[in-house]
Amino acid sequence: MDFDINTILNAVAILIMFYCLYLVLSLKSSIPGGMIGKRWNFLTLLVALFSIGYLTTPFFGRLPAEILRLVDSLIFIFGAVYVAVTIRLIFNIIRELSE
Image (cartoon, rainbow, N blue to C red; front, top):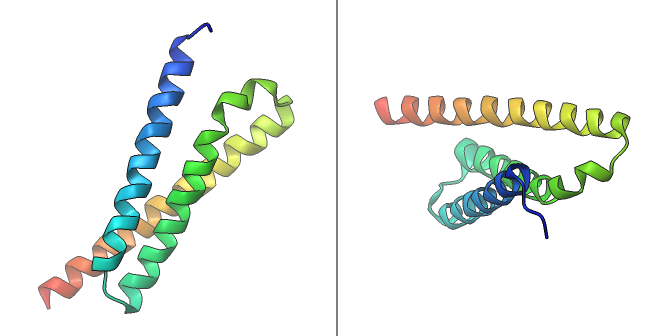
């Protein structure tokens, strides 16, 4: 099997995402309910979605160009949502701790 830099980077990215999924699931029991718990559940869902998406990257070469552009756009939008939710969660945690 021929391994190029893209294959190696995809494999590393997949491993990192599954590590992130492990972390987010293992921290779930330590997260209180309420607003922080709801945001954490949403972050968990996004990490799971990204993990599944990362598993599909080895097959991107077989996709038509239009579908590949759609997938890229979905990755960008879900990535932006993930960053926004993470920042809001951190903001709310800091606000709660400073009260």
